[in-house]
Image (cartoon, rainbow, N blue to C red):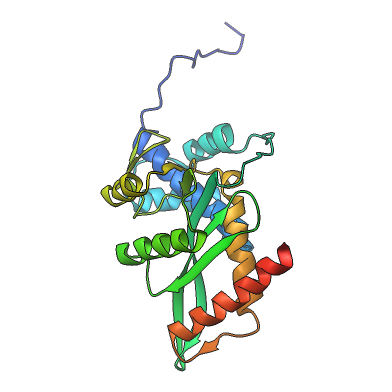
Length: 242
């Protein structure tokens, strides 16, 4: 009677930590990792921020539950094996923001980038937005520039590529991506949620090109002029890297 009571918690279920909540936590963790890779160290969500965001979305979940999930699933030390690829095997695609002054007006443009997993080939172009027309346009331009198709294209969780999440890690492609895949014949896959190590190559390339090309010059008369400048500087960068 004087001994400390013991409780068996092994059979308890997580009534609030549903698959939907887990997916939202993983999405927020992925955004945090993206900000970290882009050098936005002052814009990283803390666990309390993630919990507040979930509550704001209407989920009934406690702060300790969020902390426990992140600690158990996303804070483990991992060993990463360096991947080796063949030429013509894999191309990665992503978008990144570029802030310029166009015709005297501060403008935020979207820089689409296709970069090869092997070698230092990049194809990039500036657009007003990430709409389907521009998503298709940069693929067509890049394929024509390469004069061929790589075997596999890898995407982040983009609206134009991912229709919906199925469970925790599986994703369903959009009809638009499926049409491109059927027409050109390449395979496609998506990065895993909150796995910044898988997509570091393309995100580092976006950060590198943005810094090298647009740190010294940011004013242009038109978007077309900015794209011409980007093309010229990119050729110089690839020549330097090779």
